[in-house]
Image (cartoon, rainbow, N blue to C red):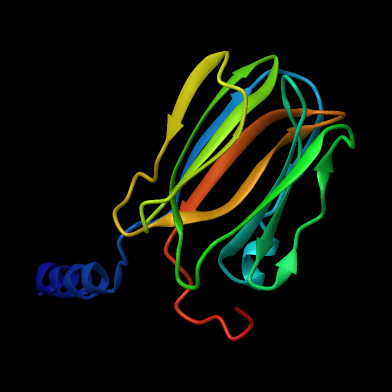
Length: 165
């Protein structure tokens, strides 16, 4: 009887277990810098735009828009600011780049087939994609000072509701 009760409990709990969806890639880059994380920003909605500041050699700074809210800017102030907006419902499904001591290049790939490159093509390469199917880039983390020292990429399912997007 006890064995049947245990078996029934296992079957019920197995049905309520949701498949895992979140994953992480990184950190890519060098040492140093102050830690930052946009983990709280993902509550504002999906990533809808990206601002990247670049100079002749490095990714200097970055800022991400989640829903309609911009994250805090991280990094330095020297260089040119570039801004890319995603189309409604478009998501980032892959990030590649290069680094040597600091981040030098970032390329965001979307589920609509767009490639959004920033920076210079030199250094050690990396390529990051979610571990689980049907997941997208939800937020970034890393380390920064006067430049972006390193970046981490956090993947999860696209938010099912976003009234502010």
